[in-house]
Length: 325
Ligand SMILES: [Zn+2]
Ligand SMILES: [Zn+2]
Ligand SMILES: [Zn+2]
Image 1 (cartoon, rainbow, N blue to C red):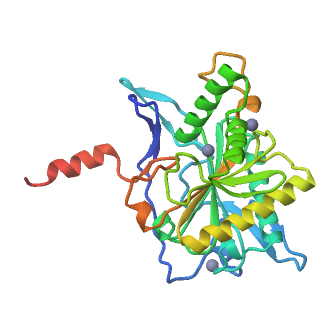
Image 2: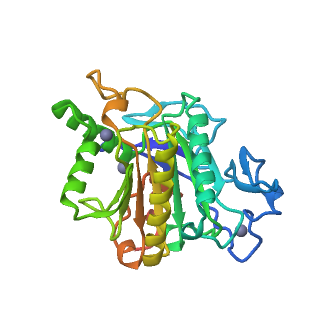
Image 3: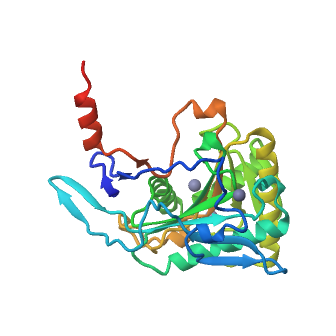
């Protein structure tokens, strides 16, 4: 069984002992309309006017995190571990098997974003979950073996590594300057206008200063908000959909493999390591990170939100030891 283990040297948690099941892309597509009975029962659907589903969400059949589990925090000498309590859901973004994001209509984007928000708000009600992570891998080079457009929702009992770093850095910036780090980045990017990809009244799309991948793009609201999932006023919603749609068109012209991650606030007002009375609402600012994973970039180390490892270190050691040398 999979479990969460904490690296005592860095403090990062990994999922160890999770078996990835690679389904053949040649067989029946479980995500296509008509095959709904082949997936676990739906959690939520948004319907088209004709009654057919536009987007649907159901529990992953091979979940990384399990809702029925308990934290069961325990130690093994100096090491910490816990059960992989959480949730893992799949969102099928579109009934059309071959439609990728760049071809989504505005309405299709709205439905998808509405379902993303619904899942975050719903899962945040469970206080065992510290973070709700929504991401999507598109293309085999990004690690996706199912072509049908889909996203993952992970509810995790710990803060994912990169988010933890972002909360930490933005908190330090705020405590020194009493300004949001991201609001500062936005004004400098607009002023310098060297890395801006697109801009409208309420949103900015830009290549981050220290990009990890060629053509990495972040989409960020120009107004301060820590929560992606909060309802938006109509003009903000329109501007967000418009910049998201156009950015995905640009990305798909350049690459057919990418990862999209939504970075929103955690499921707590204060992070455990924060001593001062600073609130996430003040110092964090939601954004979406889009990372193309084409041949040139996949040669280098991937910075994943989570390390999910099929083979446990105990098994690895046994296998390595048994090799004749
Ligand atoms: Zn399909
Ligand atoms: Zn801000
Ligand atoms: Zn981020």
